[in-house]
Structures are given as C-alpha cells and as structure tokens.
Amino acid sequence: MEELKDTFGRTHDYLRISLLERCNLRCTYCMPEEGVQLRDKSEFMTQEELLHITKLFVSMGIKKIRLTGGEPLIKKNFSSIIQELSALPVELTLTTNAVLLDRFITDLKAANVQKLNISLDSLNEARFNAISRRKDFKKIMANINLAVKEGFDVKLNVVLMKGVNDAEIIDFIQLSKNQKINIRFIEFMPFNGNEWDWSTTVSYQSIMAQVNQHFGEENLVTETAKPNSTSKNFRIKGYQGDFGIISTITNPFCDTCNRIRLTADGRIKNCLFSATETDLLSALRKGEEIAPLIRQNILKKQEKRAGIDSFESEAGKEIFSQNRSMTTIGG
Ligand code: SAM
Ligand code: SF4
Picture (cartoon, rainbow, N blue to C red):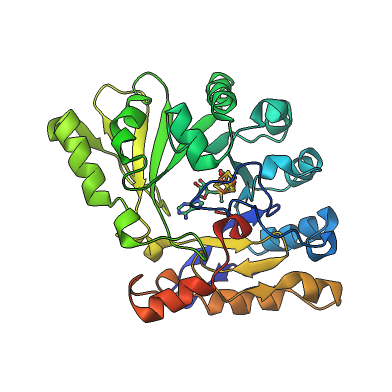
C-alpha cells in the first residue's frame, strides 16, 4: 500500500501505540491525583483489534512502533502483545516508568526490543516520590541500572519544571559520564488539566546556559541530528553517554515529524496537540474499511503543533484545553 504522506510532504512511518490509560504512578504533570476515570473494558481495543489495526499500519509503511500508555507494563496481556508484535517487520520500542521492568526483561529480549525510554524526573528520592505521588524511586533506579547492565539502549526522559527539578540538570548529565545512557530533557507541555503555564517551562536556552556555565562551551560537542529526531543532542567531551533537549514549546520540531498515535480506545491522532481524532475502533467494529480513514486523518495534519501558534493566545489555549491528558494519549 502507498505510504502515509501528509500535505506537507512528511511521510509517517512511526506509530506510537498507547496500550492503556491507567498507570501505577501519578506524575503531577501527567495524571490527576485520583488517576483517570475508569471506563468500560469494551471501550478499548482487544488484543486482536490492536493487532489488526497495527498490521494495517505496517502495510501502509510504518517501520517503527513504540508502546506507551499510561504504563504499558501494567497491561495484563503485555507479554503476549509484545510477542505478537515482534513478528511484524518493524523496530519495536517501549516507553515505561520502569517500576515493573525487572519482570519483563526476558519478554523484551525475546521480542528483540533493544531501545527503552524510561521516565525519571528526579535523582532525589523524596522529590521523585513527590512528583510521582508514589514511593517507587529505589525500585526504578535499580531497574534503570538493570536495563543498562542487560545491554538495552536506555534513554532517560526528564520533564523539567521550573522550581521543581531544574536544579538537577547537571546531576542528570553527570549520569552519562560513565554509562552509555542518553538523558533527554523534555519541556513541560500543556495538556487538559495539568495546570501548565509559561512560568513552569524550562526553556532550551536556560538549559544550555546552565550547561555552558558548568562544563564550559569548549567541552560541549554537538552531535549530528538523526533524521526525524525530536531532540538536539550534545555530549560532554570524554563522557560515554550524551544528553538531548526536546523543546516542543520553545523550539518545535514539526518540520520532520513522522509520528502518528493510536490511543488505547482505538482512535488516531496525527499530532500530540491535536484534539481532532479519528475513531478507527468503532469503524472496525461496524465492518467498515479503516485504511481510508487513516489516510484522511493524515491529510488533515497541520503544519505545526495542530495549529497552535502560541500557547498563550486564546486560540492556542482553546485547542490544547480540548485535548486529552497525556496519559490517555500516550506520550
Ligand atoms: N508511563 C510511561 C512513562 O512515564 O514513561 C509511558 C507514558 S508517559 C505519558 C510518556 C512520556 O510522556 C513520559 O516520558 C512523560 O514524562 C511524558 N509526559 C507526560 N506528561 C507530560 C507533559 N505534560 N509534558 C511533557 N512530557 C510529558
Ligand atoms: Fe504514569 Fe508515565 Fe504519566 Fe507518570 S508520565 S503518570 S508514569 S503515564
């Protein structure tokens, strides 16, 4: 089948699948304290439906799949899902909070998953537990070390929030000194209900100012950007690992976007910020063709951040306030 090209010439070959909306953590920037509203099981894709839709995407040129959520590792049939997906001709990856990672090392290896994105917002136990509203810091740190030891290519996702964890930027980069680990600083993004405002965003410029002041500009090596990369990457001279900055707010990377998202309830989103979704699951259950729906959705993709020019304008606020929370999109 023909590849998924939008009206701006961008080919979409990367599918992010949210396996579920629920999570075992309650990160303040992502989830309400009480968790997401529980919905009837019938509203979500079954394993068969998930596989059917995914295979169709692969026939339309998807080459990379990331499983996310909510927390993908609390999905009951995770092992079976990953085993089935591993038969597809794609690169399979996972984003996880790592609380349960030790239980799935064997399954992940068997499915040939080589890259893991792990979220960790503080290296300070009390702060991490406060951000995630749970007490799993020690377990997560042990599992991150285990993942590195087991040979996975580990990226650590750090959502920076001013006055919360931005004093830890240098400490995080130091983690890349003796380990081949990639630290990715992510600008805090606005979603429905997460109380974002400009004052909480730690910008690309302020991160680089701290880095240059601490390490000295002469010790910073800029790495060549990979195609479709969302981060600008740097290495401190002599360090084994590196770090990157994902600046969706202050410096978006929409020009090379190749991503499409499938939510756990079977809807597709052509942009993280888009409130406009296409319901593939209902169409599939009615026996309708879903390939044309996928194409139409991609053709409606806007050039930049779902048309949000400014996050402060009323028009911008209107768009992102209609969007789902991150945990129901699948970051
Ligand atoms: N539970 C898994 C985890 O935390 O890695 C996967 C799902 S989580 C929604 C995926 C990613 O989205 C995480 O790295 C998280 O830090 C990021 N995220 C969630 N809310 C965000 C926000 N408001 N701004 C920026 N990143 C966010
Ligand atoms: Fe859960 Fe991940 Fe959201 Fe934290 S960021 S609440 S771990 S889904």
